[in-house]
Image: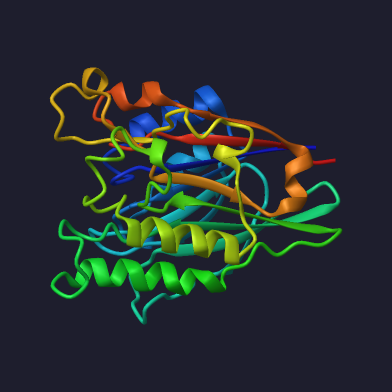
Length: 268
């Protein structure tokens, strides 16, 4: 039984609902995980999702900032909305998705961006980001014969040299500083997570999921970063059938600065 899971930082779900609908109609993932929904739960456009077949929803939102949500065409069961760094800022939600004879635990994360100054002593936002990633060490890729785990989201760190347009020029830019990338990879390994987007993809191949609004012509500049990620427990590797980065979505009308990523699994 196949399972497709998409992740997308939508940068305001109500503002960008037209392109969300386009994406779902054209690509029809089983599950879509959204970040930066930027609305409280009762203002989430649930009716619009249900109208196009996404009748199962798990939402954790707040007014104007942050927020995560999971919408699905198949039943899901909410597991938890975890607090990090003692803040109620709606950056995590997890659900269970039954797939064949397995139960998949799916985590959806929105990691803090960290501000502009990569110094935790003078920038509390950067300190918060580092602390948040440190707490994510406790999120493990739980699995056994009947279960598996997937972790997706805007993790706001481009960990590898070719996850950014210029490793050298971005070493002191938040999202690619050594203190971030080293703690990020240590956290991923501590949880026994597999980076599916880099599985069987050469490390020298450039991979981007985000292009800044600041570039007048994002496509011509090519200055992207891989900030959005899809990880899984090891037992899903044999059934992982690939993924797509929908780069064209960056050029849609009123786009997010992130694009959707879809992973596919042939779970039997």
